[in-house]
Length: 364
Image (cartoon, rainbow, N blue to C red; front, side, top):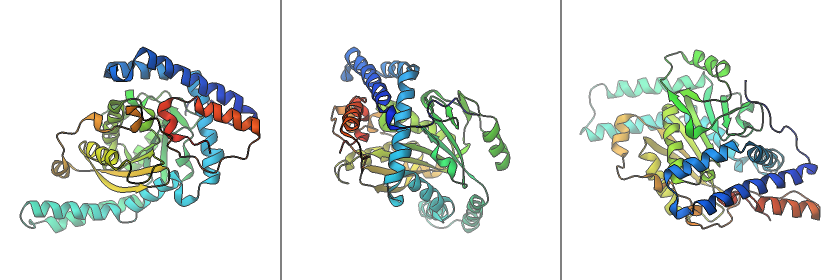
């Protein structure tokens, strides 16, 4: 079903190979930085850089191995469940679709509409009840979830999800090879939910190049947007997520930040305005020790018109690294117990990562 596996098992003897892969990635980015100074890069240049980056499969495969090692052998074992990013996504989806979150959103939408019309219109209560009954469908179907930049498809272990993982270079066979920036969006499928599930289980192939619009209930960007060197690319990702989501679907965004909650408040406010301008409404926000966690609902056209920010632009999806503020933003805690030689190899290896990814690392 998916692509071939580039790495299945990890042990400490692989640290030198992981280090070499990270150095290769860093060398590649240094070449780009010399050729295109950041302030001189145009959108077309970013597209060219990204294409060349995607073609370097050896470095990307080594990087995928390293990230899976960290996720499976470190984060999963050392992070408390109430601070785990995957568990946060699962819990958020459950509370929204099956715990009354969506129903409350629809009721608020109706109240806003009635207020805009100067009072309740005939049939509003019936419309609210109809929507409430429709939300109950999520208790009987699997939640169709797309995990972008998935690496090893961690959502497959949850029975409530029909999880599709995609990555430019997958780390396991269950993840489809896909360049999300260049994914083609086709017309929606006019099929029953169980038939759509069958389509997703049996019709997708690697490399995945096209997907019907409005087919997913959830799109996950976990530590994804900060990977891209350009706000324009982050903007395109969010637009594609909007196209792929069904009405009232959720876009879950997790991005690293180890500073205190208020330090980058302006950035989070800017992201909110930019993403809501595309037809989303933020439903939930949280700040963990190392992460910002955001959930956005895809809203109806009339709700979108009330929220629309016509002055939103791609550069509003900025990160500190866009301005050469290369400060360590950690999502790593409780490091492995290692020998001195292993410690040196890991520190040198992580130090060789692209600077735009340094916000996800901690050498303590």
